[in-house]
Length: 92
Image (cartoon, rainbow, N blue to C red; front, side, top):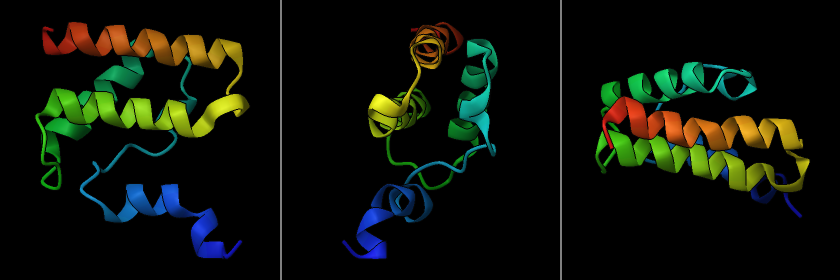
């Protein structure tokens, strides 16, 4: 497998219409903090095509899916709780 094909998910984040994220935001253990950062990034992004809510939720889901089995159960719980926090912060 070539280096490029191994790095496709990083390329999606870097070069697509994805948002610019705060560094290491997904390492936080605080769903409210993660949601707040995703919301800010989504609202400030000039590269997104969807609404800020959809962009933030999509980026979170993308991260969860790409981490797959490498995600600990506690980290998965934190990130799943972040989905609810995003809905709350966006009023959905």
